[in-house]
Length: 187
Image 1 (cartoon, helix red, strand yellow):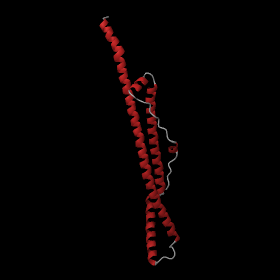
Image 2 (cartoon, one colour):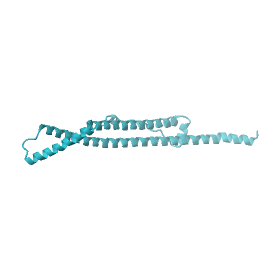
Image 3 (cartoon, rainbow, N blue to C red):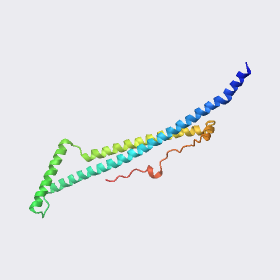
Image 4 (tube, rainbow, N blue to C red):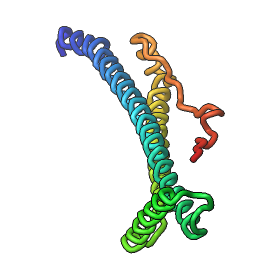
């Protein structure tokens, strides 16, 4: 074999192969960093969705439950009869209101025999469960990506490349003690 070819092979083996390995390892670390950032963004999206759903649904259910509570309160008053010490005009207004309540209840019962607030509360519970499941999935994806990149960073010889290109270990998502408590909802 010619010495020039041998020297070229040695240069290829000693310089180009390690350089290609270095570039490939660096690119893998950078891709994993992007995956971690993407997963973190997924957590942000899930948290925003959680806030929006909880805020909107709780307010909706509060408003609807209040409406039904007022309706049932009015029905109770209607069943009890006219309040005492009302003027004729007040009595007429009261009867008009009670007629409207009765009509509303009859229509609601005919169209929707189930209690509406119960359905809304059920939907609220289902929506909250869906949002929480989405948030947990986002956290698991994030932690999985963090685990992958951290494993590469601490493994020799990838740790050398990580140090040279300043890729640091990422922090796992851990719920804070205050955030592991149930969300307080008051209606």
